[in-house]
Amino acid sequence: MFYTYVLFCKDLKSNRRIFYIGSSSDLKKRLKSHFSKSSQYTKSFDRISLVYYEACLNKTDAIRREIQLKTGFGRGYIKRRLESYLKTATVIQK
Image (cartoon, rainbow, N blue to C red; front, top):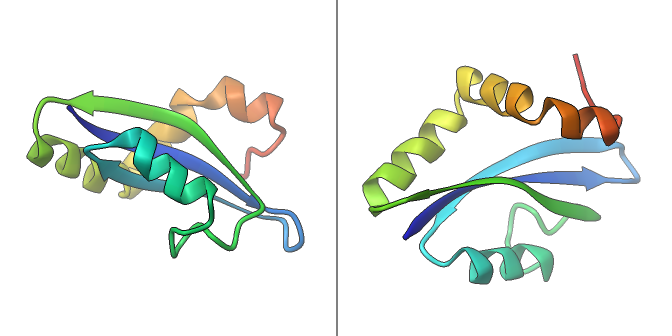
């Protein structure tokens, strides 16, 4: 299996919040690298949470989905899909 995943990252000092979107063939190992601060892009964030993932049967489909979720439409999809979570986390940005 290949996975496309979304992390919700927060930097408490600057109040910066982002969705990080990626793909991997080993989701547990990849998440471990994000949580241990050994991933270049997410290491500056204080809190990192896995908020969404999808499984694909091949690598090409997972990468295509990652690219799709990184578009404006894809980010809108993520916000709509996670609407309840984001409300409870009080982080919806408009």
